[in-house]
Image (cartoon, helix red, strand yellow):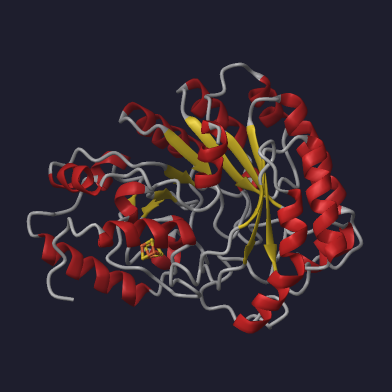
Length: 380
Ligand code: SF4
């Protein structure tokens, strides 16, 4: 198996932090020399009210309450990005919580800065709009190797796209996404591109699956991933969107062979279903939590948070602080780890009280660090 192929598989199986060495991490946390594995950066949307293009029922950030909260200014966002690069961060992921990173008026300026500072960048986006400035930047030869764009698509036709994303008009949004995907590929043939598909009862017909795979393979995508939706925080979903356990097995049985038949080394096509194996099926959290050390998140309100799933104003109780008042590194190193048991006891209680919900990558990273037996958590 080629190196690149292995890396892609690992990364899109939620295991890209598997190389973190627990012993080294503990020593670096103690000596305050730890540098995040990656920082997620959530560029601010312009609006104070409707912050996303869509209103997907299954949005992970649907319970975010940002009534009256500010938006990070362009100056602050650029300063933070600069500080991250100066302090040794290598990888920035542009993503959104209850919105899309490309729905930010300053995303072009941020990407320009990231490329200028030689950061590896990633995008988690729906790519419904791709500003010209983004295309111009990714065309340049300066894009760091390992940079990627991951498109959340979740459909293979316009009809299913609109149903899945609660779009009431008959706008041809799937076609628009395909068109943007083509533009991105044409701008840079080396950039790693992946397309993601969350499966449920709305979009599990064979026609949709076939067409989605064929369309994105034809454009030259490098990885196609199917997975099941995780349960969002504090949102009641019907069983069409969030099927029951037995139903999931039935859906899986109907599509597994199609996916398997399309898998290849040139473009892996995978159904990643690890929730039962890893014992994280609709589980809220895996704590004690290490997210703030390995993938802290700059929220759209200019606060620094533990992780991408706990990065909206209603998580200020667990946040690391306000970046308009203190620098990234002052907030990042503002912890006491001289008494590990006390540290984990206090932070775990806070996180439990906040009701945050880990995504799969976080569940797995926390699980493997807990299992390493390197840290002193005290009595369970
Ligand atoms: S959601 Fe999970 S990873 Fe994020 S802060 Fe809570 S426990 Fe940690």
